[in-house]
Length: 323
Image 1 (spheres, rainbow, N blue to C red):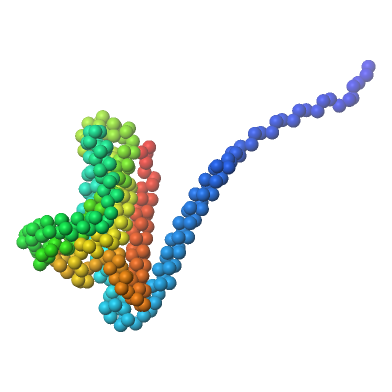
Image 2: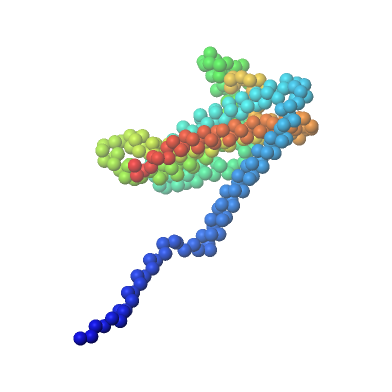
């Protein structure tokens, strides 16, 4: 009886698991690098603009008050401009935002398709009109036509500081500037709001209607809550344009430099952008540094507005149509 002691065949090795790492295509690497480079470039440009403004504005902040135009110091020079900038932009925003939301709702939920599409194109075309054309329209058409309305406001609402008067004979007032800026930012807010309203989940809308809600109740319960962050984004984009608008304000506004809430009189503060456009060609030395300092303040205001908008939008990030 023999015993076979030779070793048996070696066990077969298990196949290696397939690699789970995705294969990166050259096009993906190129696109990722381009996107990253573009993002870094934007930050570099923004930092360069901020550095330029800080360096050029520094002499105005340390100069004696007598050297600043007006002779009262840098704060006294910039404060009326900041006030006028914010006042004109807020008036425009208060007028344009409700109107833009209503137009967007009409296009998306009320108008027939054969009317909604041409109306949407028409609203978008308003954004392509140059600002100087709006300024000419404001000073030649809107300003004279508003004198009668401002007279009525003074007669019946003159106890409100906004309409205390006396009424400007030319109509070139802060109220006209606000209305003109509202027309300018209307297509921006409308376009953003319209696109957000169109993204409202149909399931939400149909569920609200199935429960017996009217069309307005459906919009109030489903569409507006979903599009709230989009409305805020559009409003902030419009506010950014209103804050930086130059030519329309420079053409329309009759400037006195006074800080006042009176919207219908001839005494009005200027805005930062319009003041820079009007004063820069004839300025030299410390005057240029002062104008750049006011531009730095406008830069900071715009940055603060955008940061506030981002904070508000981030609070709504968790809300989605699937929730």
